[in-house]
Length: 205
Ligand SMILES: [Zn+2]
Image (cartoon, rainbow, N blue to C red; front, side, top):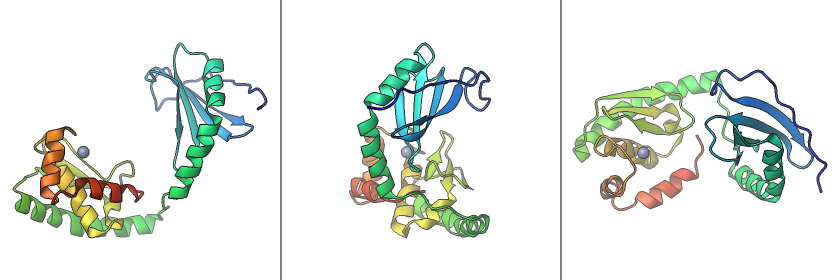
């Protein structure tokens, strides 16, 4: 079994996250570096395996670091298996500044007119469209109908870009992921929403 871990926290709180966050890294004998954070926001002890293979352990205030690490220990096999799965999917592409700018230009030229076309075809309207270098999601839409699209949509095949735009257009009607929302999306993509979603998941931003 693994050697016991010593865990020490920096006393300084990390400014970017919530006020009570303590963040540090430990070197686990099997898993390597693990980022450990205690936050006021966390509701339970949780482990995340990032696309890079990095392991993050977070736990709420009120739970001891010792208990959190014991939880980590109990999940080592699961983490290794998950990491293999995540790594098999591939690490997201790294883009240079130049490549990102080229994508941004393409996105600015392609996405807004395409969104106009799809809005006209579907009868759905939106208020504004913004192109961002977002890597956490392909797109989003607020309650006012302002759509934000990731410039990395340009790395997807055209039918998946359309699918993302249609998904966001449907949010101008339903501001949630309710059944009514999915029914609307599905009706606008010829009943292929699940299939397209599955295909989209194979791509990384
Ligand atoms: Zn959505």
